[in-house]
Length: 425
Image 1 (cartoon, helix red, strand yellow):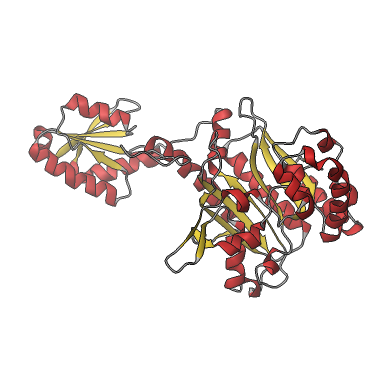
Image 2 (cartoon, one colour):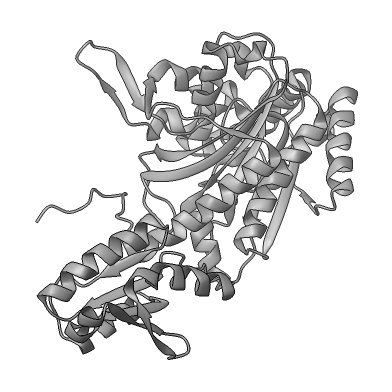
């Protein structure tokens, strides 16, 4: 028997309605905020990610699915969505549009070769937004507000927003020198990854999961202490806008995020639900001024975030939030006999043409078995067609919630159901 590859999953019908529900919430929220969908290829040229994500990141060094095509070109299954979105922004000259920032969202599968654990897969579904073309700190607050709105509309309550500033290039360079001086005398006590990061990107040492409990981590220089006047003022404006939106947050000077392109605002949204697990991060993002230029475009500051749909569903489960299954059938047609079945086929087609969700039996089962099937499908109404009903051109319609049953002329059955559905709303 061939099984699903390690790190992937099948989403069966009894679970897929949950995905559809949260995807609808996401799309509706993006529409309210006027973010438009962009769809990029699932694979890109490898160079896009080595330049865009950064060659010192774990994603590029350890987690990418990279292969050569028949033309000996190096291609990579996308591990995240920002680089692809920025590439499209540059390639299609969206920077030339009169209204900036250009506000985009994406939703689809990403691929990373990492150890599978709760809510983390090698193929996972990510939703993200990118606002490109504005350096206004108000945009930072809007991006964070959109993420929080998605979670709240889905039903989550146990949330925590954590905030930090990575500053501009000058601030980060000053902080980098301080980090090197701090870690260098004892860097041999750290893992091989951290030793490599010391010169290339020492900020990433603070994000190391293996050495997180080392005593030097607690005393490491804080980036916020090295923010220059301009960076500090920018961060103050972001916090002021969040205060105006009544979005609570906590400051964490050690929050650095795992990708090289971040600067200024960085944030994560975490679940505080009991029993959610050791990895509490649901979403993360930040500002990436300079990434558009790195990928060949003009100066176009941007900010965005990404969230895992799998982890959103896990958080809903931890908070015991039940999502409504909207896939229930409006009507289930029971046919008892060959001739009634022919009429049932016509009736099902008429109901579906009228926009009514309808189903019927295809196993020629007895009445009791068909009633059980209708119940499993959570049908609101059951239509019963037997030889007697067919002879009188009528159908028995039973309202499953109340048990009320009525004999209705077959030509009037669709109108009858539509009317009762409208009255029950």
